[in-house]
Image (cartoon, rainbow, N blue to C red):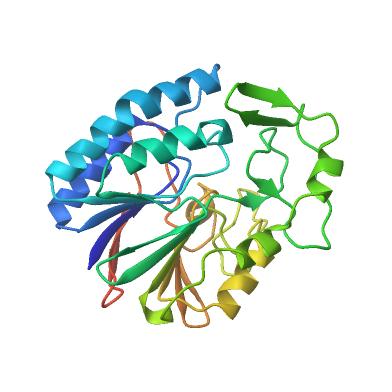
Length: 274
């Protein structure tokens, strides 16, 4: 089975079209999206809802007509207040599979996804958790914000709220159980620490120790990541390993550019295109 993996498109329709074109040209069976699907904008709630109601259903229908499955988790900038709409849109297309803290099986492979990330300085806290049980929450740049179906709301005391939530370490442990490791693919928006997949411009590794430990304890054929767009371009690596698990973090560009990776799941041959 061959897949095209892409992540962090942030609703850029030119990039979505490039990904679809590459998927067809490469004759893959599925597009796998690693999160941060929705657009950014001054009215974040409205622009993301419009994308979900108009563009994504039409895109999924074109994937179906082209014989492509579409699997996706979400990311830290995808508002949690739209999760019910996302699940409904995905559920209306039988070839589309939500990996939002859940799993799906395709051609004998089990894909298990998570949108959660480590807590950081970003204001939006919908999908932020302390990395491990021992860590503290980080202050936000500006007011901490969360969303629900009514809109986006400030959080008066984010550290206190974060301390009452599970850590990312605990969250990962509660994901659906994998089956045979050689037939398991994780799609985790947060990259792991220590393998060059969470490198920011300063050279600091902001990857997750919880993700790295989870993959070491739960080996899989492949683990797909995103979140830190600049990592492969800032001295990191787009392909590495944790034990027997191949880890891929393609990075992402902006504008009409699109970074993607075609992966043969049988051979683990990969081709990254920028």
